[in-house]
Image (cartoon, rainbow, N blue to C red; front, side):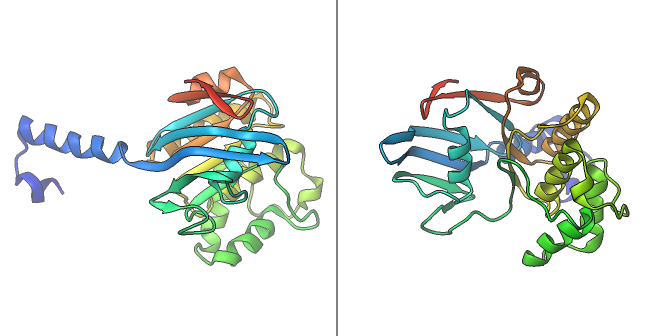
Length: 238
């Protein structure tokens, strides 16, 4: 790439030009939320929420239970349709251009797995739905979260922390560009939290965009480039 741009030598001007190319890629808008509004019955759960999410950054959404975080995440993923407003993911309007966004990995609420099957076979069943990845990709995702893909133990015998690791593995196994993670460190011990924080930072370095909710201020401080607080369905602080 350097030879195509500048020949066999690279001067300061060329280096600045290349750095600018990298900056442009990191300024790519991947999710746009405009005036999102949703209510269930008489309860307003999203109230005129607007937000822009850019490539290669980690965004933290904080707030008390019931503040609207999970509903916002489900709306981004197409699980809940807005009453008004618009969510665009990778230039596709959710509920109009596509029902659900492509190339998004997610954990929303407690990950559910088939209790009588191993970690590998649980992910294999999911991967076979899209047929995007190989068996080796599945095994690599399991290894990446600190589990053994050759372990025959049924997931029903896993600890809460091991199941949470497996949930993260299913979120990343198809190498998505965007991760939407609602309380991804639930049930993890201190070592597990440290390892999964490191994994998310690695994925950020790979150019992934991550939106996460956490009740841990330490998680938010360590991981997030931008933090937004929700209260009563609104973003009240940036």
